[in-house]
Amino acid sequence: MEVHVQLLTQTKIFCGCSTRFGAPPNTNVCPVCLGLPGALPVLNRKAVEFAVLAAMALNCRINQTSIFARKNYFYPDLPKGYQISQFDQPLAEHGYLELESGSARKQIGITRLHLEEDAGKSLHEIPGQDGRSSSGEHSFIDLNRSGVPLIEIVSDPEIGTPDEAYQYLTRLKEIILYTGVSDVNMEEGSLRCDANVSVRPRGRPEFGAKVEVKNVNSFRFIKQALEYEIERQIGVLESGGGIVQETRLYNPAEGKTYGMRSKEQAHDYRYFPDPDLLPLVVDKAWQAEIRSRLPELPESRRSRLIAQYGISRQDAHTLTLTRDLADQFETAARAAKNPQRVASLVANELMGRLRTRNLEIEQSPISMAGVAQSADLVESGAISGKMLKDLYDLAFERNQDFPAVYEKEKPQQITDVAAIEKIIEDVLAANPAQLEQYRGGKKTVFGFFVGQVMRASKGQANPGLVNELLRKKLEN
Ligand SMILES: [Zn+2]
Image (cartoon, rainbow, N blue to C red):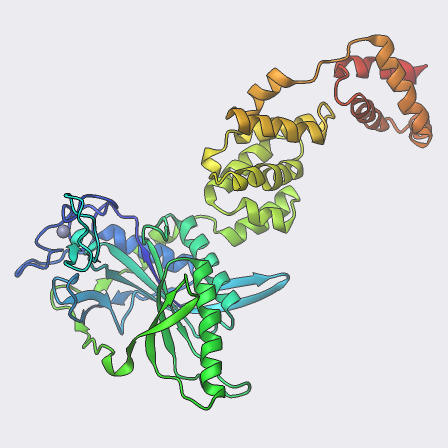
């Protein structure tokens, strides 16, 4: 896999132009990123720090000295006629990330991570101001993206199946997101990936000819494209044909890949060191400074949450989807009596409702403080699980936080002494073994009885009164 990730710097990699997405075409440009003659690049320090941080999160070795190189090719959206990239001396190498399926772990090596600039964008169809479509008549160039900093992350050829490719991308995206160096938003193009696919007969050591599948714009489509492409290659080989090394595009509507250019038309980039830029030196001191900013990463956070709060691995996965969600969960878990209950409420009741409504966690009407309160109410028996679900539904319906909904809807309390005494008698009669334990001196069973009474009253008995009457009853 070759993955390009756009870094979240304020300005471009070699000039001071803004990187803001969605600005009017050709407004974030200057002589440097327009490639005007005589303009000279100046490296953005922040871009280097972000790239190093990402490389560290992916367990890469940082090269103290790396070299910027010119990758030469002609394309209308590349005004200089070359892209500044890194070639034989990249910023970082020899990393890895870990895939997990069930209890099995698999490491996928990361060959290299290097810095480069983005190209501009060709628009082949935009609606004209007078309502006429430009389609087929003109193409347009928007150079706002020209010079936006990218990292390219290349994996070792160790990904064995389309499913592993999907997992690899998911893990990569998650790690990058935690470092905060990119928003890895596929729709806005801040994460793009190309896959190199080859098949080989079982037992044969060498790889077959590779086919590059380019510009697929979702992880799901990549998985589908790989599934199709692998079958296609096997079909060609089994019918006696040969695989041509080429670049193919995936058409998600048809679920097929199509040849774009063959090897004969492939580029010879004639890389050479860029004479306008000094070697990039990231010395040990600078590396240490950047490393100190490395946050806790998703996998270690999952392990810690499992150990610290006693939650399941599956809940831990849901709760660490983003750093923000994990932070929010921990805030709620610390505030509540039972962190496991908070975890399962977030993972099931909250996330489930967000998913069906296509909402992000930031858009949830129920805050983490609300989740903590609701967990405590169930824990104390003040509300039942069924009631909690109803209250969550109401919170989403009214777009109100849990405490507000609960205040309005909370069950009418039973304060009638005779009624509560009746429930207590029933509970004691139904639990003779526990009653005997209590009488035998095991006073902790008291809490069990309180819970049972609250449950039997559907959470409506006044808890203070229950405690008082229960104590009186048991002491007699
Ligand atoms: Zn510029």
